[in-house]
Image 1 (cartoon, rainbow, N blue to C red):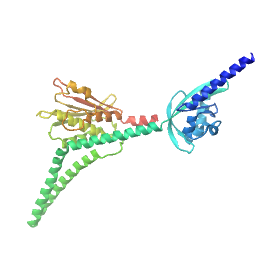
Image 2 (image 1 turned 90 degrees about the vertical axis):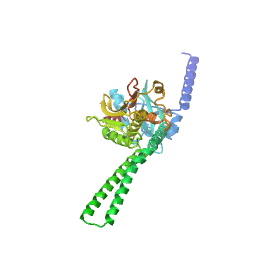
Image 3 (image 1 turned 90 degrees about the horizontal axis):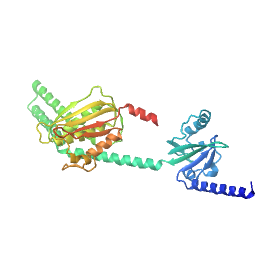
Image 4 (image 1 turned 30 degrees about the vertical axis):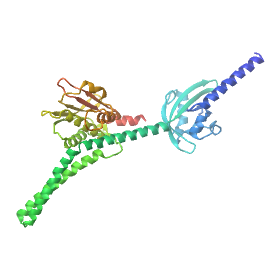
Length: 387
């Protein structure tokens, strides 16, 4: 081989290495390479920004340098096990893990690992993406979504305000009348008969006060802003409370038939959000039945193949075909009052629970039928086990 050929090959290799270094240093994501003993061989500028260690400080050291303590203690054994058995834990599979900054701060990253075989042995290439911006954006979206869901609940109570005020006025008026009767009994003079009458009047007043308090408690729990707490819940009990609240707030009373499955598995749900969906569906059904003396809404709980479900149907005219394309869109409403968020938010709630809200529009003598699909409570445990 001539000297000229050697020089040409060396020049090509130098140019190739320069291109590789340029590529590594301009990459947005962190890129590092380790050898079979987990020593860092390549560590780009993005890694310096991400972890706080310079290339001079990192190269040659064990990759545990940038791992949380819990990961670092086990990492060498993972590499050794792969070298012995070929069993892959993460190689070829992107996953979310935690990394550690020079100052000790731990943060989420997405890690993809590939393998390269060279004459000197195997090397492992890691591509690391900082997930903090995405996590922060997701958290902000969740907060905005929670605010919107809360606003929709407050709006629902506002729309039901007149009927709820009437329902509250009844027990409060009864309390006032019973107390006036008690006062008159005392003024007439007390004996055994008046004492018995007074006790009876006071007991009735207490009962009405409890009734008023229960109404206020339901309203407060419904509109209260809180962090979602999804857990296994008795769906029948959750739905029953939602029905009671809706009946309190209905201006035009309709017949509501409840059909609850006795063998229903616990649902993985946030109770107040599910009640919000049910209240909206019941109120929409009642709206569709306005002016019909035979109006009836049926609410059922049942177990489908993929989990528990709530079905709300009515014997109204059904949903017009022209309304279907925009039915679940935000701010699309044919009502004179309301924001047009009810069905849009209801479907969002259902899908955030891993379920869905679907509709059979009915028509031709059949009323609309909405099905709220949820996940069984066991999903909570399965989801936790995946992390």
